[in-house]
Image (cartoon, rainbow, N blue to C red; front, side, top):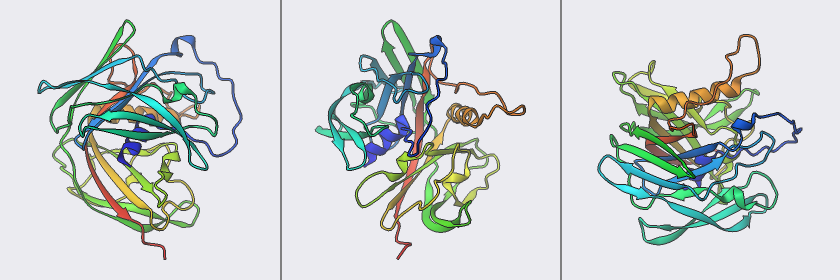
Length: 327
């Protein structure tokens, strides 16, 4: 379960459930085929996953992965980890959606493991969609350590370095009924946590819901994150809704949780540069062409040499709760 949620958080699949009209939007040639590097290391249990892919035209379905890259992750304590390339094993059909099943050697526990990646459309999964995934072999995330990611592809080298912040812990989590925009209500997660107002902290919130059939329902949302800084937060933050931070889109309409769903809320403490990266993306997707709307901008990546994407180094706290609200 955890592995699938990590992968989903990395690639952010956009699954549109309604009919859309194809638009031929011209993208400059210089912006096609640019390298995109995504992934994270946390202080949670390893392994950690990364993906390397290329940019595409706006009306294409998926970013082709790059399996030929060499990825090295190292820390300030001298641990150096050459990441393992994960290969597609098979295609799995759940009765509604196609998934790629990928297999890798879990060196931390000396076993074979698999994870599933949801395919963006109800079509046969192309090989390139499941390419470009990599997994760590020995490195472990630790608060206050500095991590450097190096990606070598062709004649180019791309690097990013981040220090892991100290963790902010979720004290309690519960579900409650909350009114929505359509004058209805839905079951929503709330949490309490202790914030340090004397320290400049930045948070990234996400949640997932897992039903009895063990499928991640919420992963079909377009934007599963919200971000917030702690400038105006009290020391004891009470009844915080993970959707109260800055985000492109809020909770979906309709039922957010069903009976016996398990809600998992994740509070990630991130760097300012990571906060700025997501803030840039949010502003870009909110751009509507109005006279008083800021012009869109490319997210401020922490990679050198013009690579897109972001290397996230996050201290995380998670809590789970089962929805028994509905009878």
